[in-house]
Image (cartoon, rainbow, N blue to C red; front, side, top):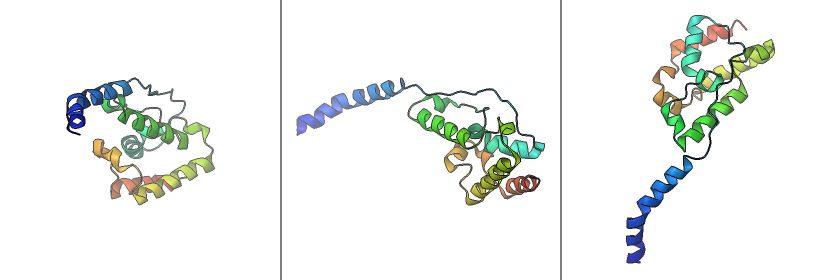
Length: 145
């Protein structure tokens, strides 16, 4: 039993370093396709959305350094892909009026529940946190749909 413990102490860190190096070889797509039509919104609303939503819901994602380090890179890329799948501000022109209304309505519900932006996003992006003032600005804008 003592030999197994000693062996882990001797070789364990090397194995962990080798695994950490190997997982860096797993490819991750970090793309920003062209913006075909950006959202037309008042400057205040646009600033709120850019700070809180655009990294996952647009083709203007800012890929931070940690999005290049596995396994965090896998999570970031997955969140962006999932966000763009739900809706994408960079292709806003592809949605008809009813779809846009549904996107904005659902988004406001998620913001009110505290689900958006996700808590782990706001750790590294504190300006992305929703405040009462930001929510009110988004609600005023949403009323125009």
